[in-house]
Length: 251
Image 1 (tube, rainbow, N blue to C red):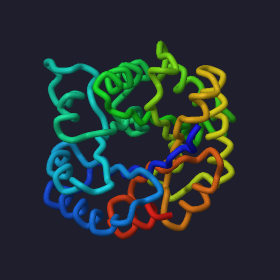
Image 2: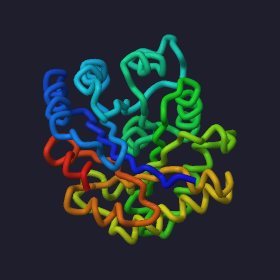
Image 3: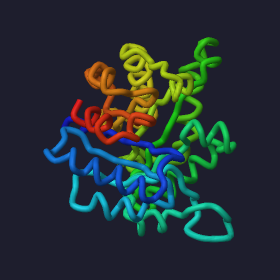
Image 4: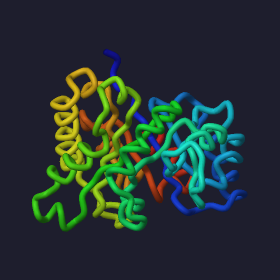
């Protein structure tokens, strides 16, 4: 089995107007010239998806979306569908980000439908899981993650999950400047991999990529990436500056 190829993913959240997003993408293309040792993805806001797809054409950078609806079309005002993402040039879609769960009431059931739908449209789903500060303090980290994983991939076979990426994002480390230590990240990633092994077998556990997300920066990425079960990073704030993000890409 080939070694897992890392993925460095930038989540731009609700930042950057269309002109700003194009400029950031163009700056990034200039900096990502030699083939990185990781796959690279950026996820701008919906309005900027297509223009950014044009700006990163013929570069090693892939396009992702920050969210999507599970239906192909319909009366879902304010939503975006998988075929719309594909037509915009997306290869990846982030699903179940903690901010979606926290602020928009996204449930494990909805996340499960989105993962199934992403797979139908050949989009690579990045399933986000993670615990809050309170849950970590209460010693509930593993039980929370097990529940999110279980509900997120309920009804799927290991064949269905070949392209799935998992992102562990401790909610207490997002945008707070706090970062899990590399050992804390490794412990959780190893737990997730063991869960996959128990649920879906050794082959999937060995091939699935598990990213760490939570205040990843150029000065901590190398330590995190050295951990055996950390296969990349889901980067928030540090992906909004081309020079900073490129340092993470070439960790």
